[in-house]
Length: 409
Image (tube, rainbow, N blue to C red; front, side, top):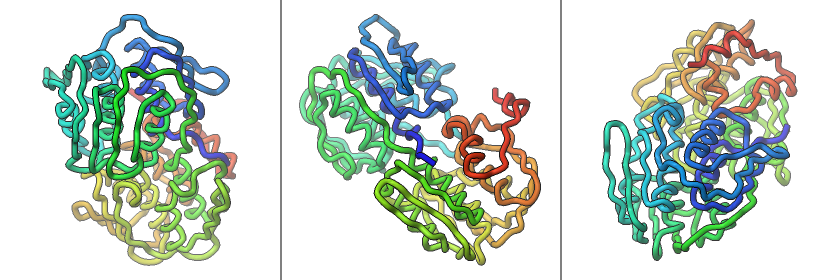
């Protein structure tokens, strides 16, 4: 199978379109719900897009448009806050509803706002909205209190049009940040250090047209590779970036799966038993929190007690109760989950609570005896494009039921 484009790289790439009125072509953009939400938001902000030949194209802009992101458009997606930096940098003002998304933790945007204030913006909170204004942002040095992916991306975009030099310290090092810097550079930005803890941006007066291919989705690809290890399967993931998958591949090997990397392809298969693991989530290059739920499902089949430490989000064990309904033996104490295996999973009717939890339940269904029904799959559709079709192509017996899919609010 071929790795799809990264949802978490496509969203900031779309937001970057607000930094310029010039045409922008984005290739390898996944057709998932969050991307469609961002497209609607950009259209509201005067940057409509069209699918052409498998890519998203944004034509030349320049028409007067609002500079607000209303609650109705952003309530389901936290990444909507990414339009704030570009709006302030380009138009001098942005008003964005406090964002929503998965209920996996508080995920405040205080670092976004502190960084914009450091660049000279005035920030005001008003009835559930963040109102930020600055006639022209000015370069400054800002240190994040902790690495934040969307915070780094927001300030990276804002600083691209600021007057003078901006130095961002303690930045997120995720591949998606590097991909955004690559796009901004193609548009004419001057950026050094993306992928490291310190990024330097020399502001320019304007940005121009670009063509950009979004990186492969390490979380989507990783989900299917975990599925191979879980089901004693054999999956070849083509056209991926193995280096981005390294934190996962190392754990799969430790658990007993066979991992082979060749060029831009990764193959995972398993014949023998699974060994228990102790894993802590961490910012890149640590183990990604977005694969924690899927790994937990895998570890229900390990022979012994595994331990997962969730260090990124405070409420990301909501899938535990649903896995328990299927027979998993998982005990949670604060931010630590202990998984006792191997468990004989049995099909059940379960409910998705967030995007990655939904993927973990689908994987559990593949390993369970009998039929499993996963409800509220609108969560799944936020980040996985046609998962059922891809699983069927890999040999799974999976079907999307229209009646249950229609339960989205």
